[in-house]
Length: 241
Image (tube, rainbow, N blue to C red):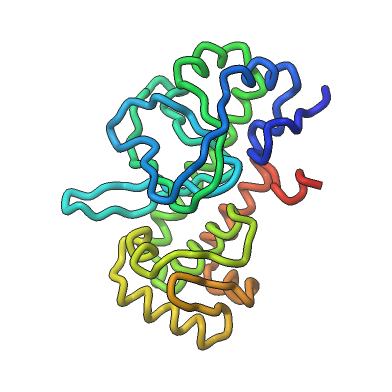
């Protein structure tokens, strides 16, 4: 069956057969994702499911002292709002836009009603769930066993993969919040990466000039997740050809 390409840049929607895309399309709306926008807070009932086309949504674990750490990120390889399809209904993490873009959005009730009649969507969602679990597991392992510089390289690479760019516009404070560390540690690690000529860094802007060097520092935490993205969901650059 011919694969639909009318789902825009979202890899899950792009792999749906025409019949399933036709069933979903009337319920989908295109929306903007604004930096800092809260899509769903921890403990809230999922009211909409998002299929990002561009941009990044962070899944944040909240702590009692008000701090948070990014457990996983979602770009055009996935969706935000999985509990709407698993029966859990409420989000265990805060879903916040970390990099602006655009997304398809569908009411959770509409997707639940259609879901039994979308067998390919069901298979793709199951594969994405495995990918998300892999990402969360590697993030936890990285926090426990890797240096801050290794964590920073992993985070930069995974974010750039979703943006399909070599440039990030983000402050050191925001990166520190994502990694759950002090800003001073991020500043020091950034300086070392710049001295190694792996990145160029100015206020609120990071440009990667040696991706291979960053990958060598980040280690298997990045490699495992990026390999699973290609294996389970697909490569955005390849599918765009």
